[in-house]
Image (cartoon, rainbow, N blue to C red):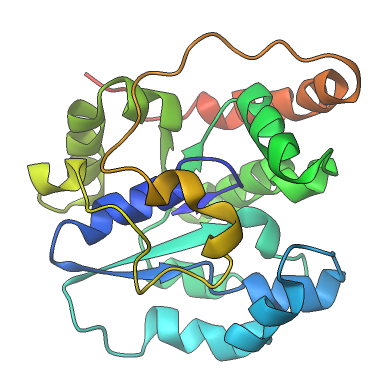
Length: 235
């Protein structure tokens, strides 16, 4: 599952974990990303210590190491995939892109960490990765977080069908609190999802942005609209 930050990806990890037949992996390239970029994220040193900080050491756990359940949900942030990193391994997994409107992402991220750089939100990288994967085939599934929140059962049923796994209503709810698979950074970022027991209701109107945030959203929107044109149509 490829997404950017503030994009329903952790709730989706909870949803897949609730199936009972799915192991979960939380942002396994985060340490490599922080070490290479030097970005001052919260808990930076602790994150780097918590997982392999070389992407080459991560890939086997995603493609060849045995998994104790029939399905593995890999939660990935597209901005973690730096240009120098080989993505050939993604041919051995099923790729899904989770998208969200840039106005909502920018507002949510800024509330946590202040004004981000456009690259930190991953919209351009997401569209770039989608095109590369679609060119080699098969084209990844794209699903919009707004569709999931509007009707979780219908959207998740459609997603399961698109990726060839059985749908179960167990995906609609989960117990409160952190989970063993959560990254150590969950202490900073996962407060809302840890308080939840299911998906929040439909999102309201787009937030009204001004100044730098509005300019940021305008920069991001073309890449969002390009990948959104390929999104799963929820019937």
